[in-house]
Image 1 (tube, each protein chain N blue to C red):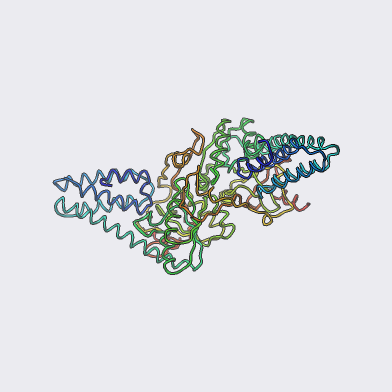
Image 2: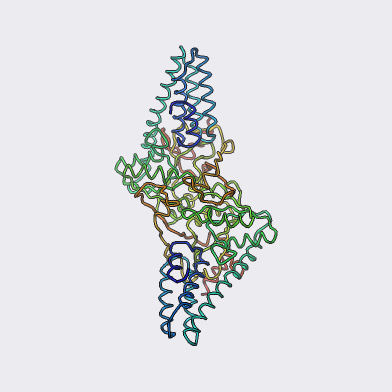
Length: 312
Length: 312
């Protein structure tokens, strides 16, 4: 992609997805604007950057990393002293820095999370919070990877994650490629899997962590309720750029996407024409279902997260 | 279909599905054998019928109606006095009778169940327990139909029910055709729907009701756990031919079907080649999650069902 508009379109159409990746991609989208700009003055450049930022912020409403990343790049553009060229260079540099940081962050999340896993553990994950949802390594799958690299023989159940099938298409692919044993199940099978004691822990990513809840891919809440019913620990692995602790869950817009995502698979209809459809892209998992949040600073219990929010 | 073998193949391949419909179809499959038989003696005919019965019983292991129906037809064949022709006619007549009874049973289930529904209620159903899963009218959808016919303005959430998508393909179609407002959701959205208080009651069918549990389409248990967590009544609508109260859930074989049902949709792959898959066709919902079973005799509370089992 060579210009911001293409990146915005790819984010909107979920060709680029995964909260951390969307954030860094948005940063690079502004970097593209800055790098290719013909602006003579800093003021002109800043106007172009602001337009790009505004376009990007309208792509998807729920994951906070997008807003965090765009704001960070904007901040950099505003505080950089010098010519338009200097500002453009600073913006590109900041995007590169964010990309590097994302990988570093994921490695740390992996390290902290792997300490929670035992040799032989079977992990259930939902959607894709892997290297394809981040710059590299992944958050939830980063934890699995780190444990695997430490020689722990973990195995994974991946839910297919309808409607967009990120579990079937991406998580199954990633883990298979890395040689981590993975079993694909449909979303409705999670109850069966837990009832039959086939999993030890659940680890998912997050699109936004607010003071009272984790907002993540639709289906996460269903899995969290099932985990609680079966006394299975439910972990959320996410960078601090996902934290939005000044807000509560009712403040957040849950994106409603096209009904076609549900009624068509690979462009072929699987439901009658004209049927009414609900297609929220995310759901809200209250903190009472979350055992702990694994971030780059360590493992935060529900209580620790509550204290963090209270101190803001 | 003109011979038993074709019916058996259609049941195995789920071209004919739904526990009550499978039962009646199996009865008719034996009736086809009897009707077209060139057997000269009753003994010869009985051997042909036994072969058909044996073939049918091997098609699918979990739903009990299949075995119930085949045994009932066999019983008829055994107890009928007269020539081979008389026996064949009795078998055909019995199959017709079972088909008529199925519709009558569903009407009664509908009547009993409709009394539980209020005007304006929103019902969540899973898979398809409608006219396409029975001879006509349906069990879970029979309850919805009966309420609708009584003028109660009910609405339905239909889960798409992966992997075979009976909710998207059949339930959404049936209800739309009848003018009952229906909204299609993916299986993972049930948590979201309940969390947002969008449904008042859950009604599902059953493939086998044992003394401690309801065995039904995979995903039923997930929905039942969610219903309990949200204090939403969870009803099972099924004819008494589904009851198998001398057995308990651990006695029952849960059919594991081809991984292709999960990895392919409309013959197109949605997951990487060679990925490991779990594909149980059913799950077990312990009675503690079931508010009541609606059958042709009335509404049986969990306790009443327990007493029924204890008295066997």
